[in-house]
Length: 397
Image (tube, rainbow, N blue to C red):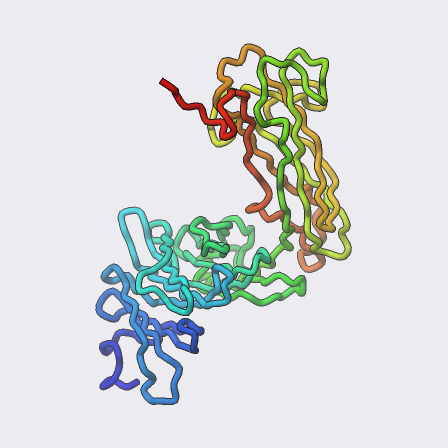
């Protein structure tokens, strides 16, 4: 394109960023023009032998001076094998936000004219000044995204995970330069961390993509190696938690109890991830009612190893890494004189990894980490109310 046939005005900075993909079922190219029309535009060209290349469509920024199109990348964030377009506007601002990233999720080989998801960063952080497809970190067949905010403190990089529903709006990780513990040779802390990002390359040959992050103000680059992510499936077998009778003491596990009790089975399975590790030590906890500030006090309790009452039970178990489901029985008790026997009792089961000692170097071995999106499950127990199969009581006046 020349000045006479350019799809945008002169000095629009067309080509400030570029990416490509089969956005419309055929190969297309996207080019950012962050000064076009004042608010910035992204021009999408169809692949062609013609010169100039034909323009397929133009995406507009939503705010004057936001530099929409300053950075672009392509990623399949929902695993449908169709490329999605991600556009950054690092100068976007509100009273509380500084920088924006827009996701245009491909729908049956068509990009929408309005963004599917908008992410924003803290005020004056320049969130989106760097943007990168960093590959599939958690092995869910959905590509993930790194966004740099180099002027949030000494710099921050946000990691957003893809999913079957699209890119998650909350970051899975917030990596702060101040928490890296590294300094440049002159002893100064790393600054402008996140000014540039490159990913989707396995540097240590552990089958997980790693990320390289620039910090130009410190003349430094930081390599972050991805830890192996363990895929865990969490479930609960809870037959005795249905229609609990508060007037009937005891249960199958403790028939002599003077209190109403119940037993459920906390279950998990771990997919194979490493030929050397055949089993793992997992810590699991079951919390009744007090999580997420639901209640200040719980109506039920468990007995811990010291035979003391608690509404948060914690144990450590060994689990094989061959995909088989393994369960542990948990028995709980309803407190005496419990008045509320209508609303269900809510529980949360959560697993965490008992980590082995660190190796001398991350290049020798990185400890794995659990996929936290699958490491917990919420469930409930219901009281017997004689309200029919659906357990919903309705007035019959």
